[in-house]
Image 1: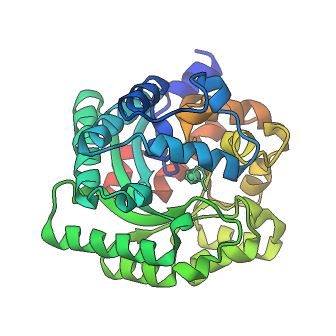
Image 2: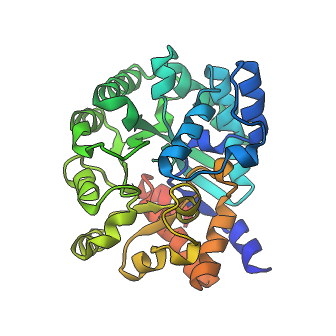
Length: 331
Ligand code: ES4
Ligand code: ZN
């Protein structure tokens, strides 16, 4: 068994994956045609090349806009879990970001029910499980975020179909010119409704913004958290408190253009500093990645052994929002 095959087969969890960013290229084209949506190019190799996070986001939003209703979300959830299962993913807590669909008149209950239905079908077929995190889209502002969280709480209290899949609330999209503290009310409401909390930060913003996500918003994890390495004191604290970072090394090259090559990524420095830094794909279909390759390329770029990668996989289990018994079952 070579390392790449072993790491592809290794049972892995994933805590940073946007379900819309897992949409198969063929599904993107099919749904875009059906909706009469013009893609700037039908050549997805061309469509999927990005100069910056914000450039990526404009394409991400185009992919999102192909999802017109419950059945599309169900198909997406189904195909997403099937594709991840093929690379050894056994459990995920996966983001969906419905702001533009809600603004366009879709019901949050339909999005949740559709995703949950598709995921359940793929789980039954593969044994690979997935739960959901409802992300606030920062580009839509704090009021839209609070509205989504309020509706999510209502669905939870009503026991709406599929809502039990939604474990938590997060936020994503652009970091430029956005103060994470402006989402305090939405995060408070999410916690009060019983949701776990995470948030994208530090992909394109300083360590002070990462600290705010934990200390002001109350997030238990930070998604990316890359700029943390610029603040050694904060690194020590995150390491001591075992605050998980869901790092996406290849995404940071292919989406954020943060480093020229994987070898230049601070991931090994993060691990050496004792940070609970997990390995994830972010938007695998839109960056030509899968979780097996993500593990393999990290091992090869940083000289990690199979055993090192097992330790990273086990850190992933620790960082999940599963209860202790469910964590034990994954180890
Ligand atoms: C995203 Cl901030 C960010 N990074 C990567 N993928 C994304 N999808 C939506 N927001
Ligand atoms: Zn992300």
